[in-house]
Length: 122
Image 1: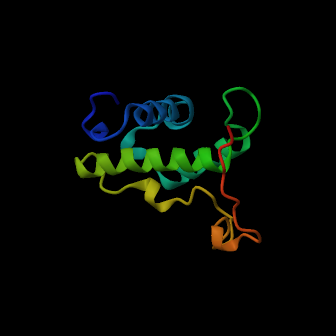
Image 2: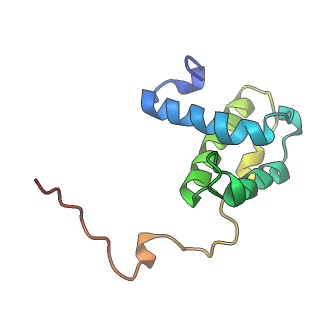
């Protein structure tokens, strides 16, 4: 991805994180699928697998945040492929990375107690 046209404007740390997501979570699961044959079902299978057993350190599934990050990176990459005429539509845009989650779940407006501001102590 370094030097890739889609990487313009990303901070080096962000680019490194995106590269890690692709290398550790995307390629091992769907990297062998030709781009033109990549389906929403295959992408949903990726997210399900990551949630169940995606840890590269053998610690079970990935957090919801990690699956969401994978979804974001994959959507951006596939949107780039659409813009460049490599595929007619973005199959990742049709998949919810967190199925079964009730609408509104996880938002701050749904919290019982508001978050406590962090105060740095010296």
